[in-house]
Length: 149
Image 1 (cartoon, rainbow, N blue to C red):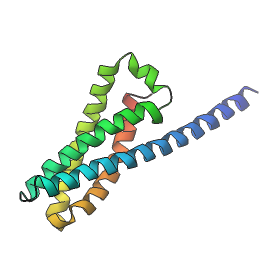
Image 2 (image 1 turned 45 degrees about the horizontal axis):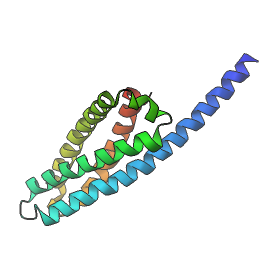
Image 3 (image 1 turned 90 degrees about the horizontal axis):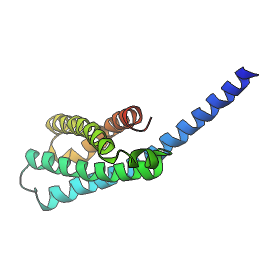
């Protein structure tokens, strides 16, 4: 009988994990739109004549905007019960969230630098799509382990 209770609990945990990851994909996808929108606008409006350095600066600004957006929605929508857990240690949680984001930013900047060097500046948005896909998994796994256990 105990085996069946554990099996049922394991199945429910698996289902919860799948729904949580789907919510994270939704939030991550919309954060990607914020990130890429800020990247595009700042590159086109502020750093239009800086070439590769302009793309990398705009990438960082977009990433920071997406990070803040993602943090807020992760607490409110993705990770069940996170709002109560995080309220008691908001600063610590945000610092860990941001540190994971900084590593993600390093991965993003490295991937962007590599991609636009390989394919050219005019393909920076296509490179961004591929780089963001990799960083999405890093962010989810690290945040799940270190913040939203």
